[in-house]
Amino acid sequence: MKVVAAYMLATLGGNASPSADDLKKILGSVGAEADGDRIELLLSQLKGKSIAEVVASGREKLASVPSGGAVAVAAPAAGGGGAPAPSEEKVEEKFEEEEDDPDLGDIFGNAFD
Image 1 (cartoon, helix red, strand yellow):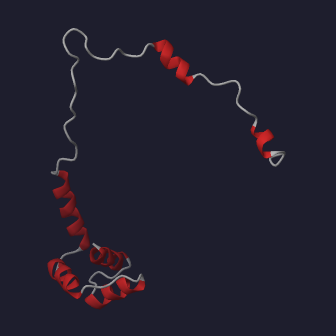
Image 2 (tube, rainbow, N blue to C red):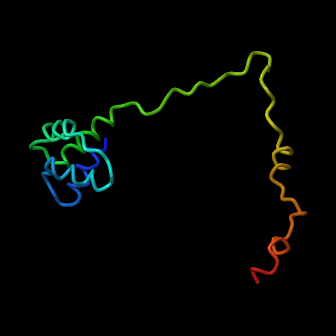
Image 3 (cartoon, rainbow, N blue to C red):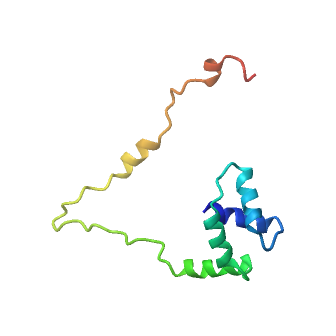
């Protein structure tokens, strides 16, 4: 993945056709090891292609990949065996503000004055 990232950085920097030395230089600048075999493999697969074409092709492939899962919805058992829904009263109680909140000015002294 770091070889691909180095290739992308080189092309974003204006080098439309980065060489193996260019990629090694980029990887070396951040202290990453440059695997020559992976660099050569990537360069051979991208030879003659623009990075825009490769990204567009990848987007098309990703569009066909399912990205969500099925959501399991449990139906309540016959006879109302499910848990009762909380009443509005209980929900409102949870969101009421407490009136005994300490004044932050007392905690921090007069630092905010």
